[in-house]
Image (cartoon, rainbow, N blue to C red; front, side, top):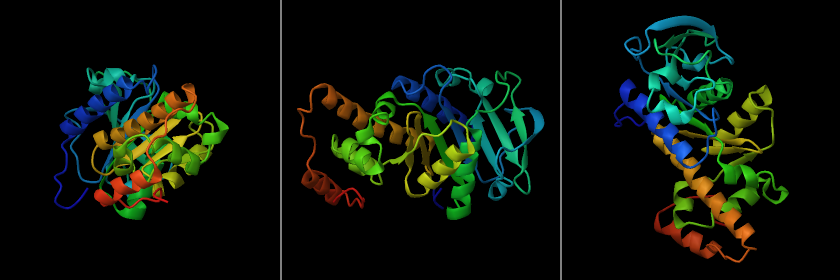
Length: 275
């Protein structure tokens, strides 16, 4: 977070996670227990009032740069659409120990999950990498499964970062502003695998949203959980327009390269997708 930006309270972040989970479901980007959310806070946070139960856990990946910080994460199998109504039943808080190999997991009396999300390794690895490289003290990470983006990743013509961005950034003037760096397309990897985590960490160094081919997306934000969800929504909307055009037989022209450059110049946007 920026120096002059006030740090969110734990209550505010819990509320953001709930509202964001509901929005992800509103755009049909999370079926059943799919999708997960995490937030890293690099300052001291009192969590026992919300999460009184404590247990020691081994972290799925080493996170030494997160030592002393706290990571909120959704529980495995919890439906994102239910978090807003029962947030403490679906969220755990992990205080990271010195050395970053273990932590204390704090949960509420209403806990309804056996363990944290199966993608916790990917979330934790992104937080660790961003803190180590950029020194951020706040970050939200959202994994969703938006159907149109995921569908396009099954089509060979869209399976590169170049092709995907040319396709989805041409449908709305807002896209080049809100997704100026575009979306990074990753190859298919087994969900929860070390390869998936490594590919994702690398992709999110230069991009703020990755597309896990034939699976879903992961987005990050140093501002809020809402901003991470916004990136999913803008990318998915572009993919929906592209899908609609495929179904219609490629009848629409979309924004031209000159029109996209004009929008970018007006709003002082620097993007690799202006050529």
